[in-house]
Amino acid sequence: MYSKNLMIKMDSLYKSFGKIKALNNLNLEIKKGELLGIIGPNGAGKTTAIRITSCILKPDSGDILVDGNSIHQEPIKIKSMIGYLPEEPNLYERFKARDLLNYFAELYGVPSNEIDGRIEELLELVGMSSRAEDRINTFSKGLRQRIGIARALIHDPQILIFDEPTMGLDPATSNNIREFIRKLKGDKTIILCTHYMDEADLLCDRVAIMNQGEIIDMGTPEDLKSKIHGEIILNLKLESIDPPAALKIKEFSTVEAVDTDGNQYIISLNSKDEIKSILDVFHGKILSVNTKEPTLDDVFINSIKT
Image (cartoon, rainbow, N blue to C red; front, side, top):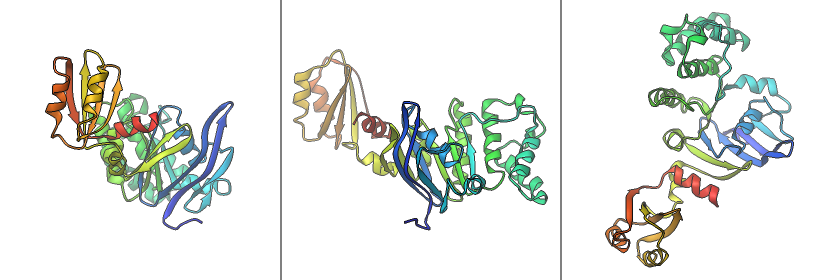
Protein backbone atom coordinates (compact mmCIF):
# COMPACT_ATOMS: atom_id res chain seq x y z
CA MET A 1 0.00 0.00 0.00
CA TYR A 2 1.51 3.34 -1.08
CA SER A 3 0.58 6.37 1.03
CA LYS A 4 0.14 9.79 -0.58
CA ASN A 5 2.26 11.20 2.25
CA LEU A 6 5.27 9.19 1.06
CA MET A 7 7.75 10.52 -1.46
CA ILE A 8 10.07 7.50 -1.61
CA LYS A 9 9.40 3.87 -0.72
CA MET A 10 12.26 1.37 -1.05
CA ASP A 11 10.88 -2.16 -1.06
CA SER A 12 13.00 -5.31 -0.59
CA LEU A 13 16.04 -4.04 -2.49
CA TYR A 14 18.88 -6.43 -3.25
CA LYS A 15 22.05 -5.51 -5.11
CA SER A 16 25.35 -7.36 -5.47
CA PHE A 17 28.60 -6.58 -7.21
CA GLY A 18 30.14 -9.97 -7.85
CA LYS A 19 30.49 -11.64 -4.46
CA ILE A 20 29.91 -8.37 -2.59
CA LYS A 21 26.34 -7.92 -1.36
CA ALA A 22 25.76 -4.15 -1.34
CA LEU A 23 22.05 -4.16 -0.42
CA ASN A 24 20.35 -6.93 1.50
CA ASN A 25 16.54 -6.63 1.63
CA LEU A 26 16.63 -2.86 2.12
CA ASN A 27 13.32 -1.29 3.10
CA LEU A 28 12.97 2.43 3.72
CA GLU A 29 10.18 5.02 3.58
CA ILE A 30 10.78 8.78 3.24
CA LYS A 31 7.99 11.29 3.73
CA LYS A 32 7.29 14.28 1.51
CA GLY A 33 9.22 17.33 2.72
CA GLU A 34 11.40 15.25 5.04
CA LEU A 35 15.15 15.60 5.40
CA LEU A 36 16.40 12.06 6.00
CA GLY A 37 20.01 11.39 6.90
CA ILE A 38 21.64 8.08 6.02
CA ILE A 39 24.76 7.22 8.00
CA GLY A 40 26.89 4.11 8.06
CA PRO A 41 30.44 2.82 7.65
CA ASN A 42 32.19 2.65 4.28
CA GLY A 43 30.65 -0.14 2.24
CA ALA A 44 27.32 -0.03 4.11
CA GLY A 45 25.39 0.45 0.85
CA LYS A 46 24.45 4.12 1.19
CA THR A 47 25.68 5.27 -2.22
CA THR A 48 24.30 2.15 -3.93
CA ALA A 49 20.85 2.86 -2.48
CA ILE A 50 20.76 6.47 -3.65
CA ARG A 51 22.11 5.63 -7.09
CA ILE A 52 19.31 3.11 -7.53
CA THR A 53 16.83 5.73 -6.33
CA SER A 54 18.26 8.13 -8.92
CA CYS A 55 17.88 5.46 -11.65
CA ILE A 56 21.64 5.38 -12.23
CA LEU A 57 21.86 1.72 -11.16
CA LYS A 58 19.32 -1.09 -11.35
CA PRO A 59 18.67 -3.39 -8.39
CA ASP A 60 18.98 -7.15 -8.71
CA SER A 61 15.48 -7.34 -7.26
CA GLY A 62 13.01 -5.16 -5.42
CA ASP A 63 11.56 -1.80 -6.37
CA ILE A 64 11.51 1.86 -5.42
CA LEU A 65 8.40 4.01 -5.76
CA VAL A 66 9.11 7.72 -6.16
CA ASP A 67 5.90 9.66 -5.64
CA GLY A 68 4.11 6.49 -6.72
CA ASN A 69 6.28 5.88 -9.83
CA SER A 70 8.29 2.67 -10.13
CA ILE A 71 11.97 2.90 -11.03
CA HIS A 72 11.38 -0.02 -13.41
CA GLN A 73 8.50 1.61 -15.27
CA GLU A 74 9.17 5.37 -15.09
CA PRO A 75 12.95 5.95 -14.86
CA ILE A 76 12.96 9.06 -17.08
CA LYS A 77 10.15 10.69 -15.13
CA ILE A 78 11.89 9.90 -11.83
CA LYS A 79 15.19 11.36 -13.05
CA SER A 80 13.38 14.62 -13.81
CA MET A 81 12.11 14.71 -10.23
CA ILE A 82 15.54 14.36 -8.62
CA GLY A 83 18.52 16.66 -8.19
CA TYR A 84 21.60 14.58 -7.30
CA LEU A 85 24.90 15.89 -5.95
CA PRO A 86 27.49 13.08 -5.76
CA GLU A 87 30.51 13.30 -3.46
CA GLU A 88 32.64 14.30 -6.46
CA PRO A 89 30.34 16.27 -8.81
CA ASN A 90 31.23 15.72 -12.45
CA LEU A 91 31.42 19.26 -13.78
CA TYR A 92 32.57 20.17 -17.27
CA GLU A 93 35.71 22.04 -16.28
CA ARG A 94 36.08 24.18 -19.41
CA PHE A 95 32.58 25.60 -19.02
CA LYS A 96 32.00 28.91 -17.29
CA ALA A 97 29.72 28.60 -14.25
CA ARG A 98 26.81 30.37 -15.97
CA ASP A 99 27.22 28.33 -19.17
CA LEU A 100 27.25 25.07 -17.19
CA LEU A 101 23.96 25.93 -15.48
CA ASN A 102 22.46 27.04 -18.80
CA TYR A 103 23.48 23.74 -20.41
CA PHE A 104 21.80 21.66 -17.69
CA ALA A 105 18.73 23.88 -17.67
CA GLU A 106 18.25 23.16 -21.37
CA LEU A 107 19.01 19.47 -20.81
CA TYR A 108 16.25 19.24 -18.19
CA GLY A 109 13.79 21.14 -20.34
CA VAL A 110 13.50 24.30 -18.26
CA PRO A 111 11.40 26.78 -20.32
CA SER A 112 13.76 29.11 -22.20
CA ASN A 113 12.08 32.25 -20.85
CA GLU A 114 12.79 31.08 -17.28
CA ILE A 115 16.41 29.98 -17.60
CA ASP A 116 18.21 33.31 -17.09
CA GLY A 117 16.18 34.21 -14.03
CA ARG A 118 16.60 30.74 -12.58
CA ILE A 119 20.38 30.87 -13.04
CA GLU A 120 20.64 34.29 -11.37
CA GLU A 121 18.53 33.09 -8.45
CA LEU A 122 20.69 30.00 -7.92
CA LEU A 123 24.01 31.83 -8.29
CA GLU A 124 22.80 34.22 -5.60
CA LEU A 125 21.66 31.33 -3.38
CA VAL A 126 25.07 29.63 -3.44
CA GLY A 127 27.04 32.88 -3.28
CA MET A 128 28.58 32.53 -6.73
CA SER A 129 27.21 35.56 -8.60
CA SER A 130 30.66 37.19 -8.74
CA ARG A 131 32.19 34.03 -10.29
CA ALA A 132 29.50 33.40 -12.91
CA GLU A 133 31.85 34.12 -15.84
CA ASP A 134 34.78 32.11 -14.45
CA ARG A 135 35.65 28.63 -15.69
CA ILE A 136 34.99 25.62 -13.47
CA ASN A 137 38.66 24.57 -13.59
CA THR A 138 39.60 27.71 -11.63
CA PHE A 139 37.34 26.76 -8.68
CA SER A 140 38.34 25.17 -5.38
CA LYS A 141 36.55 22.03 -4.21
CA GLY A 142 34.24 24.13 -2.05
CA LEU A 143 33.24 26.37 -4.97
CA ARG A 144 32.66 23.31 -7.14
CA GLN A 145 30.32 21.94 -4.48
CA ARG A 146 28.38 25.21 -4.57
CA ILE A 147 28.01 25.04 -8.34
CA GLY A 148 27.12 21.36 -7.97
CA ILE A 149 24.26 22.32 -5.66
CA ALA A 150 23.07 24.96 -8.15
CA ARG A 151 23.20 22.37 -10.94
CA ALA A 152 21.17 19.91 -8.81
CA LEU A 153 18.52 22.62 -8.28
CA ILE A 154 18.39 24.01 -11.82
CA HIS A 155 15.21 22.14 -12.82
CA ASP A 156 13.49 22.81 -9.46
CA PRO A 157 13.28 19.10 -8.53
CA GLN A 158 10.97 17.74 -5.85
CA ILE A 159 13.76 15.58 -4.40
CA LEU A 160 17.39 16.40 -3.60
CA ILE A 161 20.03 13.79 -2.88
CA PHE A 162 23.34 14.86 -1.36
CA ASP A 163 26.13 12.28 -1.05
CA GLU A 164 28.80 13.52 1.38
CA PRO A 165 28.36 17.20 0.36
CA THR A 166 30.90 18.52 2.91
CA MET A 167 33.51 15.75 2.71
CA GLY A 168 37.02 17.22 2.62
CA LEU A 169 35.89 20.83 2.90
CA ASP A 170 37.21 23.39 5.38
CA PRO A 171 34.93 24.25 8.34
CA ALA A 172 33.77 27.61 6.96
CA THR A 173 32.82 26.14 3.56
CA SER A 174 31.14 23.16 5.26
CA ASN A 175 29.00 25.53 7.31
CA ASN A 176 28.01 27.40 4.14
CA ILE A 177 26.94 24.15 2.43
CA ARG A 178 24.93 23.15 5.51
CA GLU A 179 23.22 26.52 5.48
CA PHE A 180 22.21 25.98 1.83
CA ILE A 181 20.72 22.62 2.77
CA ARG A 182 18.95 24.10 5.78
CA LYS A 183 17.32 26.76 3.54
CA LEU A 184 15.89 24.01 1.33
CA LYS A 185 14.55 21.97 4.25
CA GLY A 186 10.79 21.52 4.17
CA ASP A 187 10.45 22.82 0.62
CA LYS A 188 12.11 19.71 -0.85
CA THR A 189 12.36 16.07 0.11
CA ILE A 190 16.06 15.61 0.90
CA ILE A 191 18.30 12.58 1.38
CA LEU A 192 21.64 13.39 3.02
CA CYS A 193 24.35 10.73 3.13
CA THR A 194 27.10 11.78 5.52
CA HIS A 195 29.92 10.50 7.70
CA TYR A 196 29.62 13.54 9.94
CA MET A 197 27.34 12.71 12.86
CA ASP A 198 27.08 16.34 14.00
CA GLU A 199 25.89 17.25 10.48
CA ALA A 200 23.15 14.63 10.64
CA ASP A 201 22.18 15.73 14.15
CA LEU A 202 22.02 19.38 13.10
CA LEU A 203 20.07 19.02 9.85
CA CYS A 204 17.99 15.85 9.76
CA ASP A 205 14.38 15.18 10.72
CA ARG A 206 15.19 11.47 10.94
CA VAL A 207 18.37 9.43 10.64
CA ALA A 208 18.70 5.90 9.23
CA ILE A 209 21.75 3.87 10.23
CA MET A 210 22.90 1.42 7.55
CA ASN A 211 25.27 -1.50 7.85
CA GLN A 212 25.91 -4.39 5.48
CA GLY A 213 23.16 -3.28 3.12
CA GLU A 214 20.40 -3.03 5.73
CA ILE A 215 18.77 -0.40 7.94
CA ILE A 216 19.72 -1.40 11.49
CA ASP A 217 18.15 1.55 13.31
CA MET A 218 16.17 4.67 12.49
CA GLY A 219 14.52 7.59 14.26
CA THR A 220 14.85 11.26 15.06
CA PRO A 221 18.30 12.26 16.33
CA GLU A 222 16.77 12.77 19.79
CA ASP A 223 15.09 9.34 19.77
CA LEU A 224 18.30 7.61 18.69
CA LYS A 225 20.38 9.37 21.33
CA SER A 226 17.85 8.45 24.01
CA LYS A 227 18.63 4.77 23.35
CA ILE A 228 22.14 5.25 24.70
CA HIS A 229 22.32 4.35 28.38
CA GLY A 230 22.37 7.35 30.66
CA GLU A 231 22.26 11.11 30.37
CA ILE A 232 26.00 11.53 30.93
CA ILE A 233 28.97 9.62 29.52
CA LEU A 234 32.10 9.63 31.69
CA ASN A 235 35.33 8.81 29.86
CA LEU A 236 38.27 7.77 32.04
CA LYS A 237 41.70 7.07 30.58
CA LEU A 238 43.79 5.03 33.00
CA GLU A 239 47.38 3.83 33.25
CA SER A 240 45.94 0.33 32.86
CA ILE A 241 42.56 -1.40 33.10
CA ASP A 242 41.55 -2.26 36.68
CA PRO A 243 38.91 -5.07 36.67
CA PRO A 244 38.27 -5.02 40.45
CA ALA A 245 37.60 -1.27 40.30
CA ALA A 246 35.26 -1.79 37.36
CA LEU A 247 33.21 -4.27 39.39
CA LYS A 248 33.07 -1.80 42.25
CA ILE A 249 31.75 1.12 40.16
CA LYS A 250 28.99 -1.05 38.72
CA GLU A 251 27.49 -1.02 42.21
CA PHE A 252 26.90 2.74 42.12
CA SER A 253 23.21 3.58 41.72
CA THR A 254 23.82 6.15 38.94
CA VAL A 255 25.90 3.78 36.76
CA GLU A 256 23.90 2.20 33.94
CA ALA A 257 26.68 0.63 31.84
CA VAL A 258 30.45 0.24 31.79
CA ASP A 259 32.42 -0.38 28.58
CA THR A 260 36.15 -0.50 27.93
CA ASP A 261 38.25 0.57 24.96
CA GLY A 262 41.91 -0.23 25.50
CA ASN A 263 42.88 1.47 28.75
CA GLN A 264 39.77 3.67 28.72
CA TYR A 265 36.54 3.22 30.67
CA ILE A 266 33.32 4.52 29.11
CA ILE A 267 30.78 4.84 31.93
CA SER A 268 27.13 5.70 31.27
CA LEU A 269 25.44 7.57 34.12
CA ASN A 270 21.88 8.71 34.73
CA SER A 271 23.08 11.71 36.75
CA LYS A 272 26.25 13.56 37.82
CA ASP A 273 25.67 12.93 41.54
CA GLU A 274 28.27 10.19 42.06
CA ILE A 275 31.00 11.26 39.62
CA LYS A 276 33.38 12.35 42.41
CA SER A 277 32.91 9.04 44.23
CA ILE A 278 33.54 7.10 41.02
CA LEU A 279 36.75 9.03 40.41
CA ASP A 280 37.87 8.24 43.96
CA VAL A 281 37.70 4.52 43.12
CA PHE A 282 40.41 5.05 40.49
CA HIS A 283 42.45 7.49 42.58
CA GLY A 284 46.05 7.81 41.40
CA LYS A 285 45.46 5.81 38.19
CA ILE A 286 43.62 8.38 36.06
CA LEU A 287 45.48 9.92 33.10
CA SER A 288 42.54 11.98 31.83
CA VAL A 289 38.82 12.44 32.43
CA ASN A 290 35.95 14.09 30.54
CA THR A 291 32.17 14.00 30.49
CA LYS A 292 29.71 14.52 27.65
CA GLU A 293 26.10 13.98 26.72
CA PRO A 294 25.30 11.11 24.30
CA THR A 295 25.79 12.01 20.63
CA LEU A 296 24.98 10.37 17.31
CA ASP A 297 28.59 9.20 17.27
CA ASP A 298 27.81 7.11 20.33
CA VAL A 299 24.61 5.81 18.72
CA PHE A 300 26.47 4.94 15.53
CA ILE A 301 29.32 3.12 17.30
CA ASN A 302 26.88 1.25 19.55
CA SER A 303 24.68 0.21 16.59
CA ILE A 304 27.59 -1.07 14.52
CA LYS A 305 29.04 -3.00 17.49
CA THR A 306 25.76 -4.74 18.17
